[in-house]
Amino acid sequence: MTIEPMTRILKADQSAAAAAARCLAAGGLVGFPTETVYGLGADACNGQAIARLYEAKGRPAFNPLICHVRDSAAAARLGVFDAAAARLAAALWPGPLTLVVPKRPDGGVAELATAGLATIALRIPDHPVAHAILAEFGKPVVAPSANRSGHVSSTTAGHVLADLGGRIDLIIDGGPTPVGVESTIVACLDRPLLLRPGGLPRAEIERALGHALAEACPHPKPPPRAGEGKEGAEDGAAPMAPGQLASHYAPRAALRLDALSVRAGEALLAFGPVLPPGAAGAARVLNLSPGGDLIEAAANLFSHLRALDAPGVSMIAVMPVPHQGLGEAINDRLRRGQAPRT
Ligand code: TXA
Ligand code: MG
Image (tube, rainbow, N blue to C red):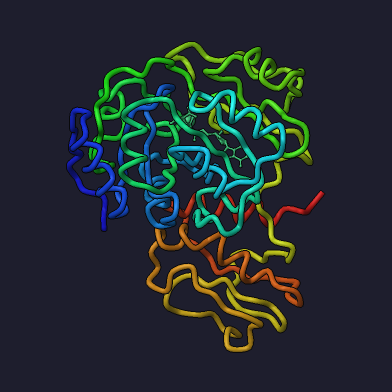
């Protein structure tokens, strides 16, 4: 399915929620209200739909996305909740709180949704329209804020249309969002850590926890006021402390980028129909997209890297990936994967 040139807009009601669910099931992109800001939703289990989502937003890099679920049972199928996470979820969900927890490998969420990380960001939104869509769809929905990369988050359907009209399939208009700033993000991996200030005040989180929250960086920015939160390089999240969460997925094997041939012992991450000299002798070969389609390549990037990163493989040769469209984000991730481990 390709992105339709026309973006449909429906007033929120039960039939609109059903239309949104059908659109998501078909791999489409749906703008919908949550209590914080409008989200741009895609099926969390469909890597190609998520690749199109990054393209529609014009994100130059793959940021991990928040998975929206309808209830805590659905959340528990995707992530592992320690005592602190369980306490926060019980006290504050549904609501403007996102919890980052270890990802269950069998949860079915596409690797691209979490940018290949071993953790997953989860949230149960407190908005009747978001809830109706999640209930109709019955599966997790990834949704970054529904704005072009570098623009402010959208708090009305009109903002979504202005930013993403013609690039997404459907917008469900549920009126202005009540909170107006993005969710507060707390990681529960070790001790609970504030990653992004947002719509849920820190004091409420600390009250539910029974103690103070650690911060991912010493001086997090104050939460933006409604409509002011310009989306920066990391999309508003506080920079994550080195060694805690910053390490995006990086293969254990080294990457040799823009490889024009395959050397003895190397695995090959291919792109396009024509394999380079030496490919027949490669330890393993996986192709991001034999047809040279960048959306397919993005959807396969993290799972292919993981599959090639097997014991006995110390180097992965990566064929050149064109730099246009999603190629920019693919190359960004490959370059980071190539950086020396610390
Ligand atoms: O209120 C919100 O949170 C809105 C609504 C639509 O739910 N969504 C939103 O998504 O603001 P987005 O993509 O604009 O911001 C999500 C933030 C990003 O900064 C991303 O880096 C962070 O969440 N994030 C997602 N998964 C993560 C993970 N596993 N570890 C650390 N940070 C994560
Ligand atoms: Mg955002």
